[in-house]
Image 1 (cartoon, rainbow, N blue to C red):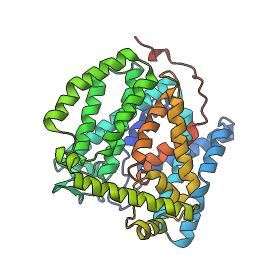
Image 2: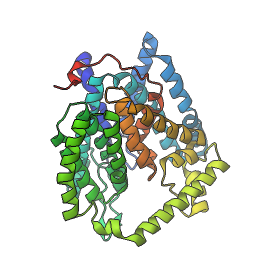
Image 3: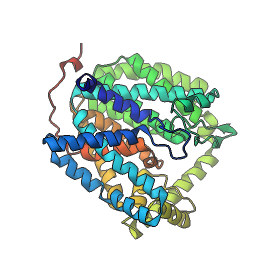
Image 4: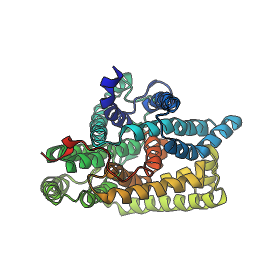
Length: 403
């Protein structure tokens, strides 16, 4: 039975990363599918270690990554800081998942299934946003696709920002944006048509419109350019470029960008938003130098508010630095840069997909504190240990060749 399911596990991982089910939707801090997955993966990794089948290099590296989260986990329990406890526990549960992903998502057929899982999961995320917009929130909660804590109190120009399956507009739209590098990987590996790419991008734009978010779209553009350069597939690049110019550009001209033209042309609001972000970034940098060991979640937010007037860093790298320690924030930034550079080796390189996802993640991390989201904690742990992966292509799957 397990052998029959094993080929589908990469798809399931990709799907659950994007559709991270709430196991107890009525709880204020509901466990998520990734939490349960971390426990299962932890048992599996221990079994592999006992059988001598688990390489020690990734385990040692993951152990080093977890030193700061583990230290803050213990300190938060002793100090009664529940916010830090929950946040660091997510890191500790993400570690075995990342080790499992390194073992299960490296061959072309496995990466293809993982990418499809991300794309299909993002499609479910778009449908969830549409259902919330139609007033079907209660139905989503019954099946664990939303929780009682979904934030319906954020507005733009008197219009509610739909929270999506991850409970908050920025979080949900950013998770959906992972479908962009995933579908580009499939397209340049000859595993989907240009129409699938187009459908994915249209769904992505619908999600951005209903959540009224901008940063994932801004980041998706350089990710698209990166895919063209890294894939070295001029013919398919020209095809998709032509289709996008012929269909998406007229749609934007006629109907406007996601959120409407007012959202993108209100210079006063943009300047105020930019000023708040620069102030919080500066305050977070100062705190990072003053407290390189981190401050925990609760105290970190309080210190940042005193320094900048905002409790949010608006930057995931600085978030990791002031909450859990500067070495972790710097390691995450370095790992994403390294993966992005190594992913340029070409579409047949095993780091092409991690590189694409790293570029998208690197960009969105510059805008928001996405390390509150267990999806991105898992992906970040995977990125941190993927940098040790060999650039040599593993046993190839001939079915990924052009047909």
